[in-house]
Length: 291
Ligand code: FE
Figure (spheres, rainbow, N blue to C red):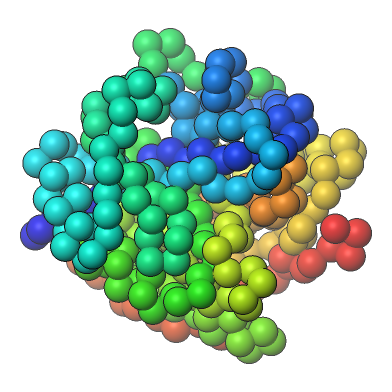
């Protein structure tokens, strides 16, 4: 099989309100903060999985996909370029900041800032959550998943499957909104990426970033802490149809969603059957009027 990315490894965001992000990171999520420039958020043994760059606007700085080794990295970068996309190597300084051996950066067909890297660096000290939690389900499944709103979803799906090597998990067209979504995986996580159709005014935005906990209690406790501390809930506690994830979505301080989930099913490529869904959730996930 040809080279494919193995996980959504890390993501960076430009943020207007770093203090609010630090609050959500520590008081709700239990991330460990690694101070510096950028401010890094730690979820596991990796040095960080999320980097926050203070700035005048909110948005995605980069979503980064991991290659297993230098040979795969070169092969995948070659396919990106063969797709007509200019990919430039990160500087030594940027590689040091991201704690990777090498990376290239480029824009996907919908204009999202993407990175491809190899050689992640695990930090030599254990993950110390900022409040008592079970921890995050990462490892070979990566950071979690990211959902991107696309002007041209089909072009995005073609690029991510053919150039980066992600594989189709399932699709959805929601009956109430006619929003279409394609869910893609690159390891047992049901989806590391979903691409959705979008109205022109929201195309190019991040819908949400999801991280998965090791225990259901962490989701429930975080839900209560959001309510106690006034962190806006976007979608109430619920359970998704396709990956069966129990989750809720808060509004991150940057406006996009932050989904905290537990208990998703995993994909085994040998037996997986691609489904098409008309609903996103078995129950819950209701929009909150206050947000
Ligand atoms: Fe999600």
